[in-house]
Image (cartoon, rainbow, N blue to C red; front, side):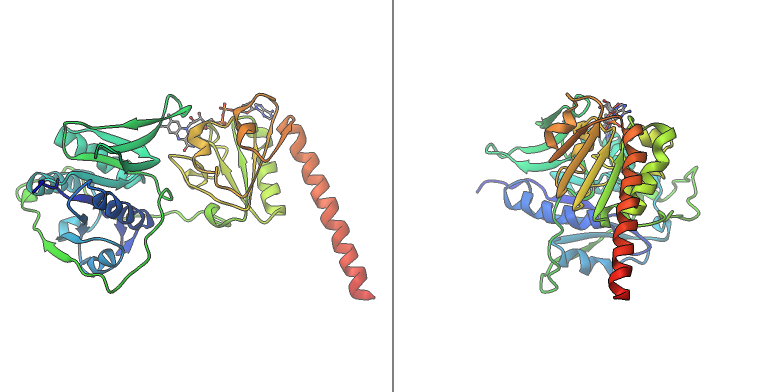
Length: 346
Ligand SMILES: Cc1cc2nc3c(=O)[nH]c(=O)nc-3n(C[C@H](O)[C@H](O)[C@H](O)COP(=O)(O)OP(=O)(O)OC[C@H]3O[C@@H](n4cnc5c(N)ncnc54)[C@H](O)[C@@H]3O)c2cc1C
């Protein structure tokens, strides 16, 4: 009988006992990959302290096996200790594929583990599949996001990949599923004195409506500039939406914070309406907004790539158009309000 390769692993991301959505999304994909011959079965690797109860949840979302390492030293994520124990587990169990969420946690951890194991890592994948030859294909944006590249890892094992949140469908929770829990102890940490000590995790909460929940997303790119950025906030306010941005706008500090970035390294949004101002249309950004309902873009360059994915395109200077647009919307809202008042009086 043909020997099946090792398992497909998902490294679980949890904070204070709450599972990250990306972990569940990856579990669904891990099951698909295993079913297509990418690995013997899907396993979730769960590190932390007092997190045993999460094993059931992971099985309900598709894990055939949970590899559990529950120890006080693993209470808070710390790159060096987590990477050490993960590398040790990989050497012991020899999985075929190891998947991480491309969050801050997963991006950092996957790179450290890959270096320790001297194997490859395809970062920020947009898709993963098993091809006709039974090879694991990792699809990444390449050459500045202009093309999508297929990455194969023919010899080194395991094959490591990180995938950004929102790329795969979260599987339905099925509490009738059964799976095994394998308990491991972090022996590799015995005698290891870390130079770091994680004290606590502080999560900043973005003000206003979360980007991924907004029905209207107003996105700003490099073309908006700092001086006109405040118009985006006002426009989003008028439309009861949220403001998103591209990488350069984030790097310049115009946007509110990391949580506002849309794209392969940021959020995936599917609003009813996406309105982009001064966005060129790089694949890295479009990967995070292409499934929006109606896509409108304003760019002063008629040949901008972004117009290729737009339902409506406006060739205009965003800095000049934004205040005019705001004025018109307010005028319209004012009118419809006074009409409504007249109707009420009548
Ligand atoms: C590994 C990797 C991951 C990345 N991940 C992301 C990501 O998640 N999200 C992301 O957004 N980017 C990401 N990037 C960067 C991405 O490749 C692009 O560089 C970026 O999206 C371009 O942003 P932009 O459209 O704002 O800027 P630019 O490409 O500089 O485009 C600016 C546009 O504004 C137009 N313009 C200029 N002035 C005006 C004006 N006054 N009025 C109207 N239009 C104007 C220009 O014609 C141009 O089309 C990533 C890059 C790498 C290498």
